[in-house]
Length: 518
Image 1: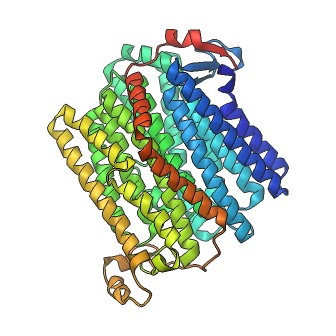
Image 2: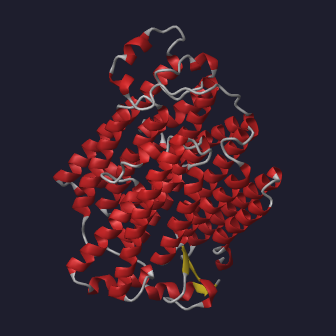
Image 3: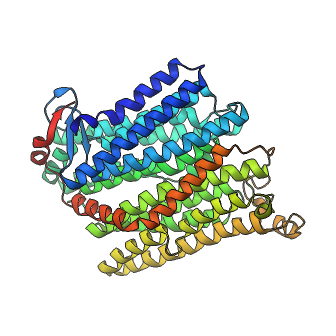
């Protein structure tokens, strides 16, 4: 199985090279991209079955011995997230293919979109299977370089402006991450995560705390955790619909993954859980209050994205096996559901010519299928039973209740309020956009309310044809969100095994018997 591990990174990188060479041959680019992501998904699924039944797989790239070489490490967590992310990337790719065919690739120019998209996938996959901090940093930089291109596609003024903010914030995060890596290497003489975990306790507590906080802040920026989440709501909504969907679903989760990996592997003896609980509560509440104050669908979803990252930080701060497992389950749920909602909003924008809930109306009669494609993931994200959103939140609240501290009780209340407000924000958008009739005079009243002054409330573009492949890709993702509920039992069991494994840090001695040359 070890021979499959490097393919997770090398295949999308090779695919990016092929699509760049054949920049004027759209069909070759499409086929190459689809085949590449499909193969990676199959490899990740095979590896997930293998490591779930056996032991994690580590590959030392280039034959260098541990801890000197670059180590690619695949356990249940890494293989699960690679499988989920490749599936999401494939669905969004199909959506973008339909959009490009209908619009003449004006929004996503073929010559640069497909190579950049596969390079983005390379960075995401590399980050998930990185066995050392520097390779994790390389994964971040690969995906960030590609994201700089994708977020400014079309070169409109708003995209360049938001892209500039995104680039500056990402560079600050990367510099802080790199500085933390240098300090860790200077203090411990290694960047291998297993070896860092073994040696970290040898450092003075004050030194551990400094290193810990540096990484938390660096990853917190990438994950859009309060108070360093200010950049996200203004950056994501301006990008093309497929780019916004994949950014919302995956990029912040790479930051969450880095937090999960480093908190459980590197700093199990350095406790900042109380601080993380406070940050989690602030992230949930501030994010969802921002969503309630918005009148544009992409901005509503962007703020809910911030608020629901708070649930993941909440579970991570509880730091029990059950809580870590619930966090992983909720992360998988959120990747899929959030991506699906942004794809559905992309359909709404094409059908209605706007994403402002003050302008869009009457879609229940005009586009009933789009109504269903929005409604199902919306109530899922809101946490209504029996959907996966409810299952994940119930598991997190149960893990917190088992701890029983007053702060845990406050977090449970905050989580419930956030869930209710999420449902309110998404259903308000549903009511105004789908149920409101064309001649409804409510719009006049709304325009003089607080929503009338919300950012982008009056934005409007032309109505465009929706190709079948865009609808099919969105419907496929909706089906996956339903599958998360139908097959919640097996997936939840895998996540619980992940939680148990993560609370027992991997040692260097455990890795070495599994290492093979890559």
